[in-house]
Length: 206
Image 1: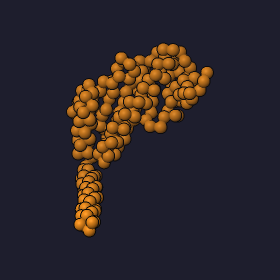
Image 2 (image 1 turned 180 degrees about the horizontal axis):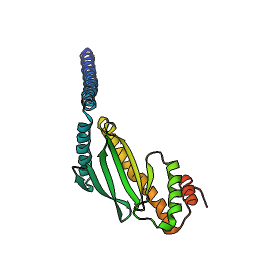
Image 3 (image 1 turned 120 degrees about the vertical axis):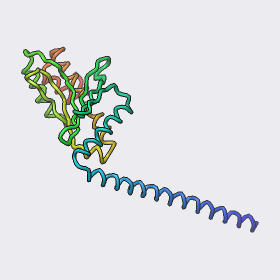
Image 4 (image 1 turned 120 degrees about the horizontal axis):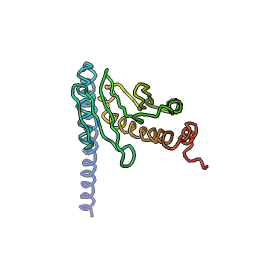
């Protein structure tokens, strides 16, 4: 009986040492990750604007390749043209470019709007911009197109890699909603006020 008790005591000590060692190893691992991240961020912050742009440009292309998107990269302009399905079986070209120390995401919601609907086009853009949290709907009166544009400082994406994924995902998601809003206006003749009301109250019963 005493031999069994002694063995049990030894086993408890061994198990305790094992879990303590595992805890210490995990703590050291987390600490080392924080240290490595701190050094990495310090290096990024100390880069000049030109090198920050180069760093982000490589990350942007790597992300698009990882997602297996269809895209073309223009090195001199630091612009990627990406083909994405904005609605089922209908693709749009999304422009991701780095300029003046910012990452810009653009997509044309309407490539050439009917001149006779110009007033409603502007009214809808004004309403949409009032409810958008990020970015802006812009209208080009020279070429009669409507686009959705957002931008952020390059450094934000270099310090947090998840920020790039979230930024691109958000732009794509919002663009789908905005595209459909203009589809309703131009193709279905729904007034801007009704379109905005539906966006603000999607579950409201008619």
